[in-house]
Length: 475
Image (cartoon, rainbow, N blue to C red; front, side, top):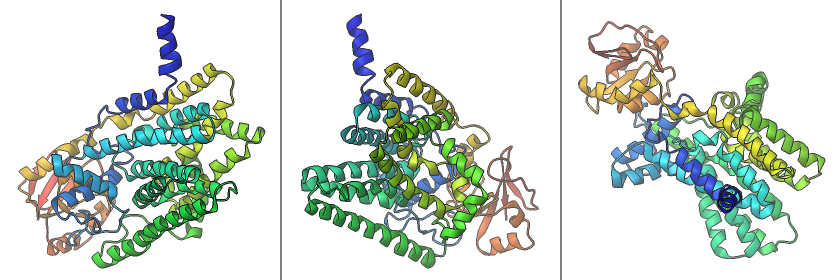
């Protein structure tokens, strides 16, 4: 019995691989759920809409397209759609299904967690690495890592890239350098803000003990990645938006001082994105304790490793302005920095039992507050039947429809209807001449959302469907 206890307590539970596999299995619950989580459904549907259009319309990766552009092609500037394309690639083999994206992200983030552990272990200590990785696993990423968002995908590849970049500086082999370049390009192109993680490399670059040749080679590889990112986001994205007349769907930031002013205006909500969303309240307290202990014990290198990517991400936050306060998933990319500091703080506690208790408490709060992300509630669940309803109403695949969505760029209703068309708010829909104008542009039906994502409106047109959640009018 003692031997079994020792194995479980000292070997199995102390092995980060056990916890990565454990949380992987736990998060498989509801993995085939539709992308209707309250906080992220619209952003997930953006991703899936592009992936489905690769599968059904045009597989050219340089021309991502969405469905809410009306009579336009729907081609739009977005993040470089490697994640969307991975969903499309799997669909070529098995047929299209949205939950492939969930599985892809869950696998990659689990691998990313191990690389995060390896990075902290190799350059700091194993206790800190273990605690930091557990905190990362039970953070906001517990639920987001199984959504179809590009953020987990991009962050995982940046973990891989950072690991191999440091490995190259340490050993000098060219394979890690090549992997740093390729994996970094995938991560940074997939989500430009994920590139802030790689700013950590500024520390070894100024380290005099590392050969100058290696630093120059790594810098050159980094510049190649930077060139690719700049070419896509600052040349190709504006080109797509201008050429295909559907710009502004994917938010590309705002002027620096305008964003800064918006953040000051909404500072309580801004602060909440730091102390609530990433690690919840007990996790944030653990982060503050870690920060205090690092300062008290003069662990300046710890603070520098935290501050460089964290400060870099603050610049991204300023560019997003008020949008930072309303997008639940935005803090996810600085969770590793906070988990890193918290893990270092916990590693300085002598009592392993106390560390376990703290991690347990943080985990209970964090996971409990994300439980709603693992089930779909009404009236959102009704959207799983929307395509069937639209089909039965006689709407053909190429018929354009209008949805009374809350926002013109809301992708969720049209994604589930599996149709193309427009999103028009209730107020705009009722403006004199608006419906006639839509009809002239080719709209044949109006889908009225009675509960979720829209406001009920009665129209003087023939109804081809009427139920608790939806009404469809034929123009």
